Image 1: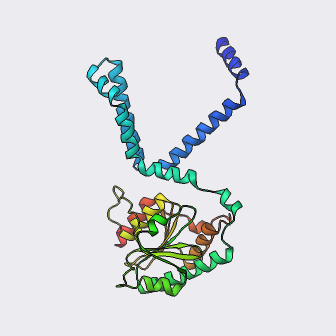
Image 2 (image 1 turned 135 degrees about the horizontal axis):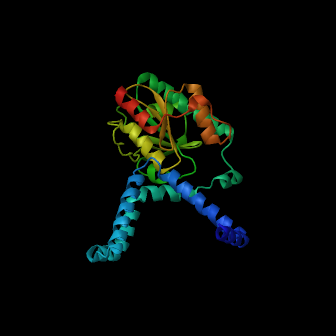
Image 3 (image 1 turned 90 degrees about the vertical axis):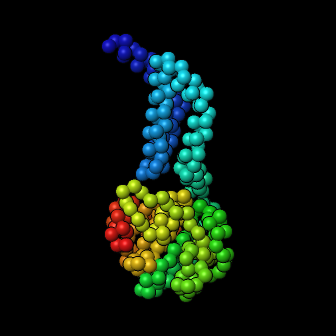
Length: 286
């Protein structure tokens, strides 16, 4: 016991503030990594990689020469395979690191009046489309640029009005099957193709619009307004989750908070459903 206390005392005497900062930074990065991969297929991939490395360690411990040779010479291939398998997660991580965050606030942002007007016009169109049960996807660009997504559609660069949005999504029009991209206060493009999220195990079938909205929000910080063609319900997708059952005032409040960065606490009525529960609800309604 005395040796333990002596060693602990010696360790505490030799700790520098840089060592404490080092541990805190590593702990923060590990925490962010766990947040990033939580609820994704990366968890299963990590478990698989862990099993592979355990097998390699046992091969070295038990002197299994063939397995040891394979793991020794296949290490670089495993690293390359891991990069390929984790490509979506790595892309999300680099995207989050590259966002301006608070620096963007210092550089300036859109006036609250422009944000409010754009949101009101989008909701006016959403209400009209919902009453007619005409499906739509309205994407609000935030810090992550969506120029690559806009390139898949037709560039418009026009003013955002409810009439224009409602006209774009009229069934039979050339652009009604795609999404519109809004970069406040301008309508950038229409007829855009969004990346589809993979169907989650045990959830079953979900609509293409909802899969597209989830796919984009998993890869960027965009907000997507979804109008269901089957039910007429209006939903919001954000950060890989779908918020449903919101009336127009609640939808407006959420959009203004997210786009305007007001910092006000979100109302309890805006609590999101979990992704699996939401998709099960979609399956029951389909």
